[in-house]
Length: 241
View 1 (tube, rainbow, N blue to C red):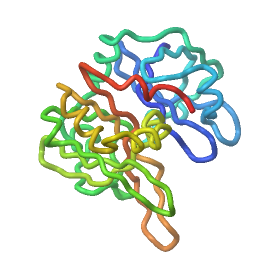
View 2 (cartoon, rainbow, N blue to C red):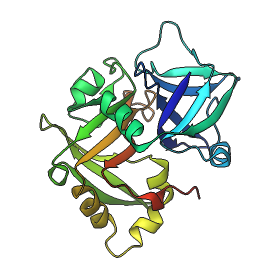
View 3 (tube, rainbow, N blue to C red):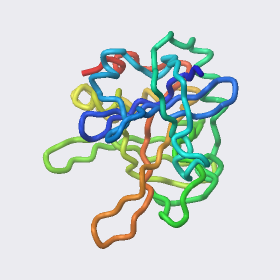
View 4 (cartoon, rainbow, N blue to C red):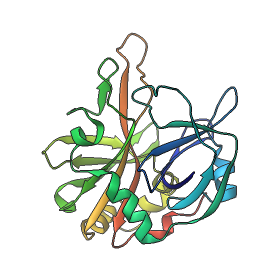
């Protein structure tokens, strides 16, 4: 099976989470190694192969769980994975458009007006595409400063008017280049202005495994896995650090 990569996100411990869409069926695949322990690719492995959004990966994928376990229905195991090409801009746009939904509820099969879903009311999937038009009114970026570290976060509004504020952005390209982005003349404002000029913006949204600090109720927290714009994009963010 070939998938077009739609998500490359940074994880703790020097790993990345990769996901892609099989263009003929629309199946979303999160490839994981058939090993004991951490099944995700390391950052070094992804960098060595230059795995980027739009990369075409070929693998012998089998479902990690049968039946799939909601919400992480995208988990697939592989024993062989190789980079076989790069999708055209049209093909990359097509897989995003095919998977896109206008609202959080339509994307995940469950509504929320928070940055999370309760563990006992999980969404129907853990990765989805939200399509934004009229971008200036529906996408904002902010700088979050904690413990001496800066991070870019986003405020989004879906077409139902549901607002999700201060979503973490784990898109590898954006997170790797945070210092470069914020060191420019306009910083987060520059991102807002760039995406506001685009006709369409697709957000790949993900939810993590249920988690909470000790003593609190576990939740599936939302994050932004990828930000893709048409007709223009920011190629300077593609390089691995």
